[in-house]
Image (cartoon, rainbow, N blue to C red; front, side):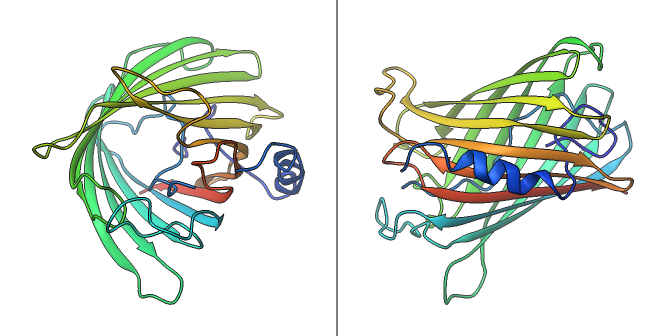
Length: 264
C-alpha cells in the first residue's frame, strides 16, 4: 500500500466503493485463506528516519469451511488484522515488521506470528516512467495460517507510470526455512490504477498463486482472486480498500480488504 506521503500510491474516499462492488460482481465464482496482507507493492518509501504504520485488514465473507491441511484454520468468516510498522533507513531502504493476528467465528483473537521485511526501491522519477525494487520477508507463523512455520518471501517490484495510469507487477517467490518444508512456490500479483484526481485512484488488483516454481500448475488450479479497489490520500493518512472475487475453485469466493496507513 502507498504511504501517506506518496502521491501516486494506493489511496480512497467514500463514494466509489459501491461502484467498485458492483463491478466486482461481474466476475466469475469461486477456497485458500486470505493472506495477512493483500496488496501490490509500489515504489512508496518512508523518508530516512521516519516511522510509519499500515494496518492491514481482511475478512472472508465466503470461503472454505473445512481446513485445507491438518491444523489449518478454515478461512470462512475469518478476520485478519495485521499491523505493519516500518522505518526509513535510507532513501532506498526501508525496514518493516508485520504482527499477524486472526479471529475466527466464536473464538478469541489469536496471535499468529511475525515477519521482518527489508524493502529496496531504486532511485527513479516518482511521477513518470519505470520503477523497480525488491522486498525480502522472513518470519515465523502459526500452523493455523501456514503449513510452513519458518518461511521467507522475495518479492519483485516493477512498475510504470504514464499520465494518470499506474501499472505494477510483483512476482513473488515463497519458500520454507524449515527442514523438508516443500518446494519454492511462485505467485504473481498485479495492479492497474487510474487517477481521477491528485488524491484518488480507481483500479483493479489481481493475486495469482501459480504453484511450484519448477513446474507451475495449470491456470485453473490454486488461488486466483480479482479485486476492484479504490485508493485515496487524506491529510494525515491514506486508505486502500477493495472487494475481491475468487475466480478459481481454490480461492476464497468473496474477500473484503482495507489498509489504513500513516506516519508519525
